[in-house]
Amino acid sequence: MARNRGDSKDNFIYRHFKKALEDLHDIKPYFWFSFFSFFSISIIGFFLPIFFEEKILEILENLVNKTEGLGLIDLIVFIIANNIMSSFFSLILGIFLGIFPIGVIIVNAYILGFVANKTVVIEGFLVLWRLLPHGIFEIPAVLISVSLGIRLGFLLIYNCIKDYKNLRIKFLNNIKESIRIFLLIVVPLLVIAGIIEGLLIILLE
Image (cartoon, rainbow, N blue to C red; front, side, top):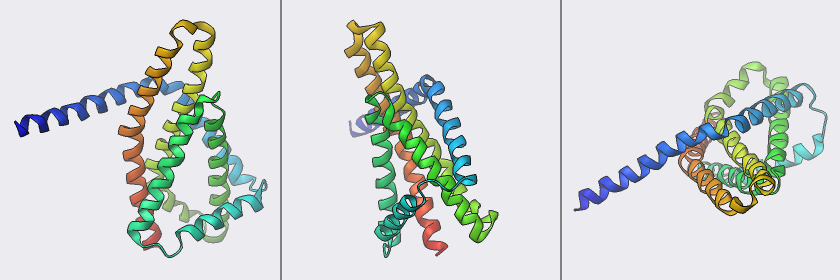
C-alpha cells in the first residue's frame, strides 16, 4: 500500500511537471519580449554605465554587507531565498497591469550590464565567465517569472474588455498555471543557480 502511495505521488509530480512544460508554450510571446528587453537594456547598461550610478553602488554595497561573513550553506540559502522571493513578486505583482515585472526587467538588466562593465574594466573580459555557470539557470528562471507576470496583467486587461463574464474563471486558471510553472520549473532553476553562485563566490574569494 505504501508503495502505491509513493507511486501515486511520483505520478502526481510528473504529471504536473509535464503540464508545466506544456504550459510554457503559452508564454512564448511574453518570454521573447522579456528576453529581448533584458538583452537590450543589459547592453545599454554595459556601454552606458552612467545612470543612477550612486544608487546602484549603494544597492550593491548593501548586498555585500548582508552576505559578508556568511558560510557556504548560509550564503546559498540567502541567494536562493532572495531570488525566489524576487521572482515570485515579479509574477504575482504582474496583476497591476504588468508594470512591476517590466520594471524588474529594466532594473535588473541595467544593473547586470553596469556591473559587467565595472568588472571588465578592473579584471578584463575573461572575468565574465563567472556569470555563465549560474546565469544559464538564473536568467531563464527570472525571465520566465517576469513573462508570467506580464501575461497575468495583460490577460486580466484583455479579459476585462473582451470576456468579462468569464473573467474570474480565466483569471484563476491563469494563476494556477503560473504557480505550477513557478514551483516546478522556476524554483528548481533558481535552486541550482543559487548553489552554483554560492560555490563560486566562496571558491573565488
